[in-house]
Image (tube, rainbow, N blue to C red; front, side, top):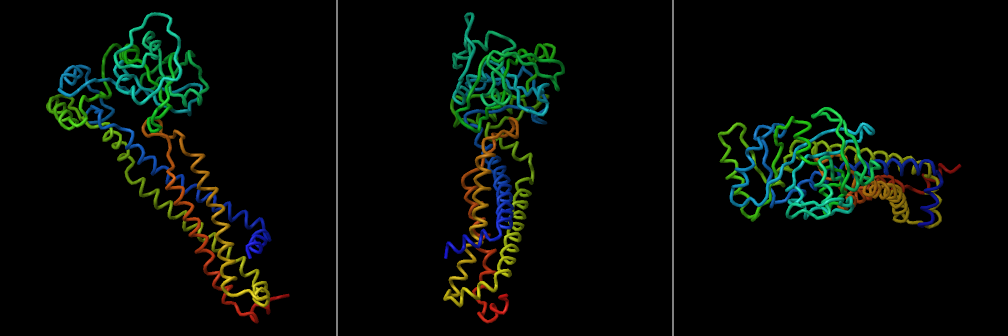
Length: 394
């Protein structure tokens, strides 16, 4: 009977192909939309409970003074304090190839040393003092004011090379900005991202701010992560009546704040996903109904030859399941391998993630759609009387 099912599938190959293609595209979109939800969930895992982020209480785009740093470092429980400023320049050679850039100071690489590996670095031509806790491979970076560190994926995507001087066009800080790639990092955790560029905060301050030292965010490493709530309250209480006031939160909570900015997007994506599922159900059901109507006489012949109602019913359901499951497998797995790992949100969210749970959900949906779309035609075919069916035999 299974051979008969295969033969029936290829009796009208164009229709079978188009139906499978529609299911494939629909399940690809469904799993990709699910991947966006997975990425939002993954973004919350980026942050660490052992690190805090201090920013302007009014808005993330408002500065806080460098003078706050000394008072923050004096708070008991703060091990290290680093500056992190958003740069926001563009690559003139690839205007649409957005990537994140941050001006950071020396302690930043000590704080994030457990999260990154330096896989390439320029040879050191002179003596260099590497700050405590920083990977010694970054020695060449600290010798040059215009030096930068880039992610491995960004290096490959842009076609850059170690030691190459690149020039970015400033937006927030206008003008041409030359940088020399002195090190390449690889993230130990995928969610950290490998399409980011880091450079010296002093270079940004001198060239872009006229020597002023305004800070976007402070990143703090704690001596004891269990004291995070005590430390953040102590910091904010110091600047409660200052202008500007600060908002201190764990890195995980800070990252989750970006997710909240997307508002009802998760709900919208779920609605779109359900609409896609309903659409492919209608497509598959219409295809099977058409196929069964065309073969009414054949079902009469099969029953005459001894096929039972149950066998006819199973044959039609299996036929529908193969069409939808085949397209569903290709679409769901295609979303996993084509979308997973791509950076589409810059540095605000980690690279796209498509969980295997999302893929399996898509495959299960395809299987259910096949069963449901074939259910009514299968019932009609199994209940068909031989006499009524044979009337249509030409």
